[in-house]
Amino acid sequence: MTRPLLFCLMMAAAPAAAKPVPLVELVADPIPLTSVQLKRGAVDVRVSLGFDKALLLNLQPAQALKLKPFPLIGKFKVKNPQIPGGEAVIRGNFISGDVGGTGAQKLPTIWIDKNVVAAPQQGVVSALAFDAERVRIRNLRAPAGGQTYRLARAGKGDAEVKLALGGETLRLIFDFTSERSVMNARAAGLLEREGLARRTGRVGLWSPVPAFAVPVEALRPAPGAQLAGLPLYDPVVRITRARAQELDARAAAGITGDSEDDPDAIVVTAEKEKGRGREPWILIGRDVLRFCGTVELDRPGVAWVLSCQFPA
Image 1 (spheres, rainbow, N blue to C red):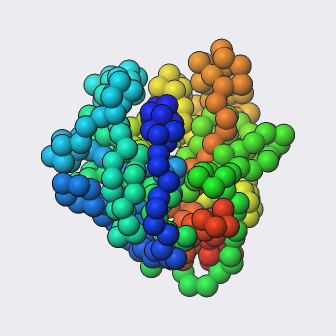
Image 2 (cartoon, rainbow, N blue to C red):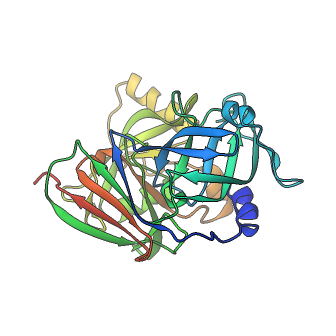
Image 3 (cartoon, helix red, strand yellow):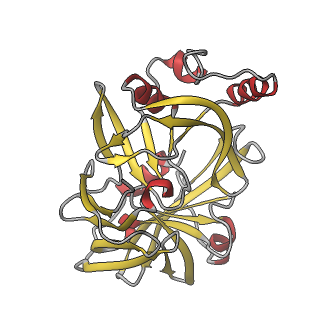
């Protein structure tokens, strides 16, 4: 919902004058953290691998730092029944900031009147926002050793990896901030068709931000299922509330079974009415990344480099 604003802000961006630092090293325990120095003070933030160069802030620190939205295009309202209260006001601008001590730059900054992270952090910054050639995240909880996986990013300014699967393009992103791997309905359908996963009928909730939870259905990966060499462990798929209520009712009635019993299990009505709908995407969370000792953004090589020791 922030992409139109991010695009407008990026179009106005000035190139950074300083030379990027060679390397930034962070620790994920379990989520990597850093600070961003703005004109009127610093904010403590989480570091996300899952979106392009930007800073997302809670409303309170944005107000305390007296940030002002970009004229005309820098403020708009989004209405969605899944948002707490049914709507949110989004503001944004290019703000001068120093991410993790890598030097001042103009940073696409968005603040929302709903918290994007819980205290004590005040926001989320993209790993691509560091003015550095490489950003290396060390996961001290991961097993030592393992194999190196190099995945090309879609472009120099992109966080996502694009994979060809089953005649479609699958968007893959990584993020320590999510406990589980999450995907949309198109991606789940694609994995089913390729024999990589099956629906289970088990319903849960996924909370991408505080006070914002969406229903999900657990998937059962096929033995040895992988994407770009990375295993699938505990994935879930976003589902509609109607689908979640249906599954809960089936469970209460003692009805069991998986996708073979219910060929239309994942229903996203709006997408079906529009045709193909959104591109399939999968967020790889800590269920997979907890086995990776390092995850590195290689900016010159336009890639993510992961060193992981997965169970045999």
